[in-house]
Image: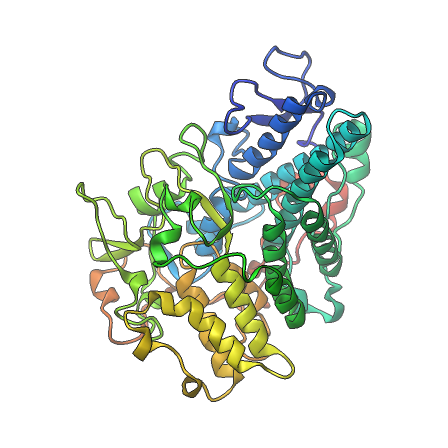
Length: 524
């Protein structure tokens, strides 16, 4: 926490799309930096402060480099890359994500360290925005409605960042009765003085139940306060959509359905599955609910941007495990390959040396593809699963919602769509929903979230981290369709009881935080 320091700095050189912001102790006040109090002294500077908050979400910092050297922690790229590589449906082809992929991280390794550091750096920015905007409203600098919109957006980002981090550093909600096991500290104080640092260092980890309670409270406030409708900033609908995700983890099926029904008629699936992706489509489609903007002049760069890592550099490929799964039909449109006149992939996947890669992120030069945080297809599948899991299951509605997502990608829905006869009970239907999630959200960072919440599930339990294909480049023959993939694997499964299931609290945090030093995850 001592890195979350005294000034909220706004670069006046880059406020057109994002503002380039950092927290630093400044001995002087350079011409291109302003203090925290000044940052909320005029409507235009407040708007720049809000842009700076989103910049923190999109870029982050890495090894204390400048903002342009960030690697997309936590919402710009890292949530996709880390969420994918913790699961079994991708293969890390090089060494870039190997420590995450093989669970050989420790309290000093960079990927898990900066998930924590940049996550809390973003949270602190949100808290500073809430404090600063509240004072600006009281001072009459901005009106109440504008201020509420900004505060709601900050609460949204604060909520989803705590929730995301809890899925990596804490056990799932149902690990104990009442979720009384350790979560993470839920930070609600904007730190800009030494006294605030000292006070925050004394706070213990909240329980997982407390974290979720606070996440939902922030999302409820966001729903009620936000006026923005731009998909690259928090919106009322984004807060509602995210609540369906949170309630799914809590196994509160009724609440998933209640929240989903608020927005189920506000969006529509794109006609084709690729309609959500690409540098143009990702900012202009009927399905995206909240995505993180990436600009040509400000993005996670060659070492993190999604189109760089997943496309041009081919550092992560689709695993034969999911590619050969029989539930993914051979003529499914999500297998489609297409290329422009220069040979650049513009479909859903592309092939290189026989291996399959995602083409969801296509701008390999300027890295302007939006990072997809949550979209309508997820809300539909969240609701589909919830309807099937109700105490009195509504299998008809569950099937209807599942087919709405799946049918879009079928070559012939009239003969290939699921019917009532496809499933004999709710267990089979839920299994189809879970498999559909793996296919639909492949290479979007969603796999770890499902692995995490399905630990000890009553219908489709996962024990720990599934076995994976070995780190490296799979042979072309491993992608031959017709039979399920049955090995070789190379990365053994890790039981849920193993300490490596959780990421450790970073050593740099423990070095300065006497409270969390005593609360490290067991085994680390």
